[in-house]
Image 1 (cartoon, protein in one colour):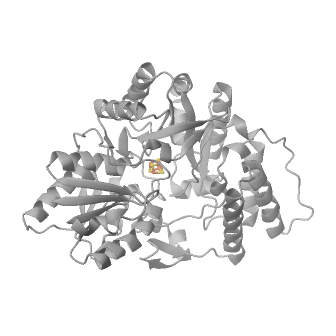
Image 2 (cartoon, rainbow, N blue to C red):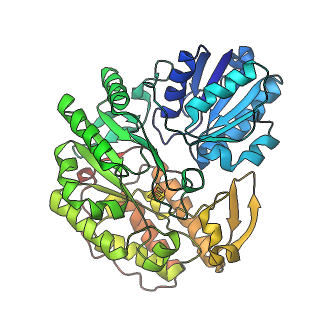
Image 3 (cartoon, rainbow, N blue to C red):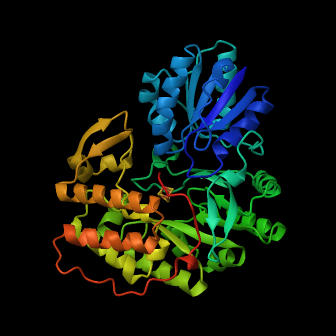
Length: 450
Ligand code: SF4
């Protein structure tokens, strides 16, 4: 049986979500081909001889992009079976079934993919969706059919150089239950470990293939600190020149503050942290597990250690207004974070996916108009239409200026001006800050979308 695995979007990284199942399926005797449609054309002709086309759905944007391709595949080859797997598959199962999905798998998908394909081969029925939360013994991801790492997003270093970037994970899922997080409806406060020898072998094969920097895609790198820190220590010992980045929540950065020097000493280029809001009331709604003052404390700890932070935000949501947006921008200035914040973060609007825990909050239900299956979200409008207009304007500015190659400081300056005009401020206050040189902050040259 032939299976073609497709990824549509993986934040500019070579997708683990194709390489890992490719290894499992080949071990089980299936013929596997792969296309990363983020950088390769859709294989319209090549899939003519494929029995199943399987779309990897790790996030919202990837799912939106996969839908028209699945429809196209079915139209071109009406007999082809459609499979969807990854985080967004089970929570959108009804919609995917309406597209004719034959197999829908969430959670720890590799083992279940093999089982589902074997059932299909034996003409046995499959119940959809299947969400596997079992502990898997992982295989080393098979990256042989994927585009070269050189074709993906690169780390731009503080010296202005580019480093070829690879991607792996030490865990999946998360032990926390933040209400706005799409991981929670599937993993519900649990995470699963990828064995150390598998992670190390995956890093090794990527380094042999030219990778100079690794992004660890764990939703939170300190969910299992013993496991993950053991891996970065082993990685640094074997590849002292390799740099890396990880994502760690503010709560863990506070709790494990004494461990932060390990990151600085082992080649960590930056740490992404989902701050979401500067407002404690909003942090409580999200159930983020940290306060604004703890975030400020972490910013200061990073400065002391010379560690680079890449904070992310949900800038627009129902619990803010134009004045709150100005305070958000002011806090970025006060904390000297302009160069640390990717411009898209100034425009991010809250997504409320199906089964989101935010739906349990009465204030959320008040602003939701309807569930939009094709958009894969509960649509919401801000009580003040000016806020939605501001969000759209900021998003347009960020898109346009990013495309034109403007610096983070230039984009922030435009956003600052427009936001103050929207709020009716005249004159517009100056930012009162000397903008640091961009080259002091390393980052990946791929805008961030969820
Ligand atoms: S800590 Fe991060 S990954 Fe975990 S539930 Fe919260 S937002 Fe999601």
